[in-house]
Length: 422
Image 1 (cartoon, helix red, strand yellow):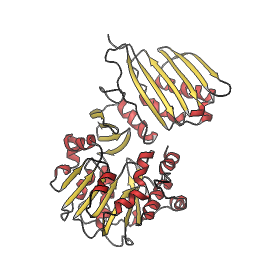
Image 2 (tube, helix red, strand yellow):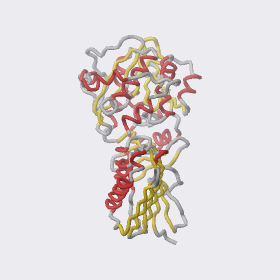
Image 3 (cartoon, helix red, strand yellow):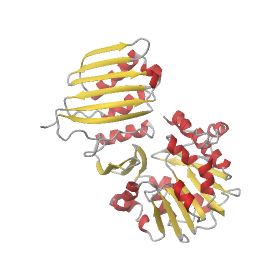
Image 4 (cartoon, helix red, strand yellow):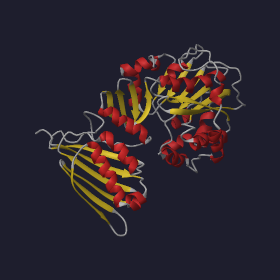
């Protein structure tokens, strides 16, 4: 039997209790959403509970939409059923933004079809929640691209995250719906991540890359002819598989993971650093943004201490540190935490088209200064004069006073990220 309609079950978390207890606002938000989808509304009924909570029903020309809220838990349950193939997914991020949801999960069901439920971001696959780990802008952009012309090069779920590789027509990697790179401008990010640190380091013999399983940072590292060995440590086997075996990505990283100088370690970085005794001339930390408690632990004083313990005496460490313009307290907190781990810093930022203004911290045992240095290898996006990268607007510099140290005993970075980014 062909499916007779689509049923989306949406659970939201982290919304403002005031919003979830405001029946008129909830009715208007859902009405705006349904009208944007283009489904006629036949009847509406909303009820305000005493003391708190709202339930509501929209009777539609193609079935119904219902909500029920638990303001005390910041939770809203939303059911949407359309007796058609209408794709409402591109409109969900705007609704989530209106509801002030920090996280939302979607189950997409084909009603009446024997193949049952399918994840909404894949034409075939298992039922998995869509987790909002990044910001709503990424999710909104992704859903818009899924609604338009696109080709799914790879879709699946590893034990750690949802992996979606899109060609739209550029190639984009999303992890848990957060954009990781676009083939159009990824060199802005990866050249900026690698080359200042490599230029500041007197030696490049041994390099450690923490994260960066897509191979794009490795591509930049291997431009230096004096590199003898690169240890790449990445937890996710699916990302590493994509980097090595999906032709579009392997072409982008120029086969970097197959270079004989590169050794891939598919394990948690903390375990690797506890087991290894090697000392590195440059350490590149291409970590996921600290969007939850687990990822926040990778930006603690303790983890930076453990990592820096493997630096050569004149070695250099660089860490991607989110956007100083969008989230200055996140940026400076990462820097202050690195300083608490015994590193002196040189901080910089630049414009990455897909991400906006993006920041990095370089750390070393001795004071760092860029001076008159130039990047000595061929680059596409790095200018001859990098001194503007090391200047920050006054409004961003002022936020440095609000930075704190993120420690395993006082894990705060993910909360700061939530407040500034989401």
